[in-house]
Image 1 (cartoon, rainbow, N blue to C red):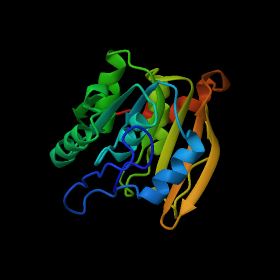
Image 2 (image 1 turned 45 degrees about the horizontal axis):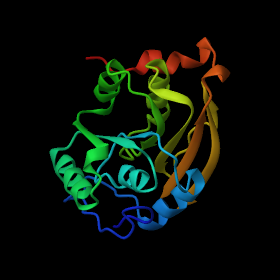
Image 3 (image 1 turned 90 degrees about the horizontal axis):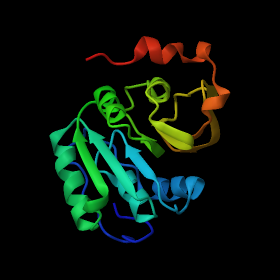
Image 4 (image 1 turned 180 degrees about the vertical axis):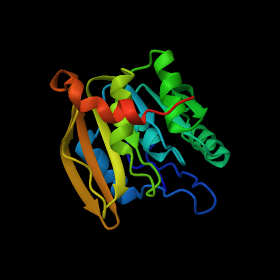
Length: 202
C-alpha cells in the first residue's frame, strides 16, 4: 500500500498485522478519489473504521486540512500513528481508539463537523446507513458533505434515505463503493427513525 497522489504521493503505508482488517487496495483508492475529488481545497475528514488510516491519509495528502481517525483496535491505532509519521501528516490528524457509536457521540460533544466521511466497516456489519443517520441526528455533517461507504458487493444499500442520496456506485470484485451526498433540507422527521432506534447507548 502507498499514498496514491498529493503531497505524500508514493509514500509506503504499513498494513495492520493479522486478518482482522481489509485495507482498501491502491486501485480502488485511486478510483474512489477520482469520484469524490480528486483533490480538495481544505475541509475536515472522518475515517471512522480507519484500519491502517489509508483513506484519511490519502484525503490529507490531496488537500484536506484535518482528518480524524477512529478505530477500536490498538494495533490499528499504532499503525495509523506510524503511517501519519511516515507521511509527515501527523500535525493534521486526531486519533481516537473507540467504537464507532461512542466516537460519534464524543465528536458531537466537541461540535466537530465533517466535509468528508469514510465508512468502511467490517463486512459482517451492515449498518452503514444507520451510522450515517446517526451522524445526521448528531449534526456531525456539514451541508453538502460527501460520505464514502465501502461494503461487500453482494450487499446493497438504498439509493436514498433520510437526507442522503447516492450519487455514484462502483463495484470492484467483492468490494462495492457508494458515494452519498448529504442534503439535510431534503429530509423529514419520518425518515430518521432508524437512527433513533439504532443509535448506540453508553
